[in-house]
Structure formats: structure tokens, C-alpha cells
Image (tube, rainbow, N blue to C red; front, side):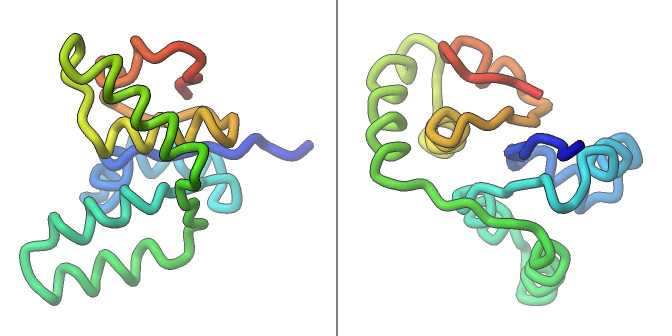
Length: 126
């Protein structure tokens, strides 16, 4: 039986890069072939690198994962989410894009920051 595809939030990848056992174990349970990383998460990880050595390390560690890009539909949904939830819930642009990508492609979102997403209708959390 094929497992479902899971979209990973930035905090999951940060935890994985730090070598946190709980996250590594869960990612192994999901399976490398079933993990999708949003392109905005890659941007956030690259932006968080403190130097070129760390940036190269991040690039090398994530290159075996599948990348998923947001498209016109997810961009429109992200705009709607920001309009609806920025003022009331403090929704940030990267989180809106990640949520919109999950909604567009009907994916569950694996995140440790449940509070950043739980108010979004239709979004399935892993």
C-alpha cells in the first residue's frame, strides 16, 4: 500500500537539520519518497544559513527530497488567506504560501507550529 504524500513545514526541516531524533524518526516513518518540501521552505532555510558553508550543507542535505512549487492557484489562495487571517491571527506570508500549497494539492501538512495553521478551513494537519 502506498503512503500518502506529506508536505513539511519549515520547522520540521530545521528540526531534522539539527538532528532531532523525534523528527528524524517521524520522517523515516513517512518515507523519503512521500515527503514534499515547499519551495518557500527552501527559501527560508537558505535565508537562515549563517555562512556559505552552512548554506552548502543545507543544499546537500535537502537535495534528495522532492520539492513542490506553488502555482497560480496556490498563489491566489495565499492572497485570500493573508487578507482573511493576517490581522486576526497574524498569518505570515510564508505560512500562507505553505498552507495554500497544501490546500491546492490536497496534502497533509506536517508542522510543529499547529497554532500557525489550525484556523485555516480545509487544511489537514499531519
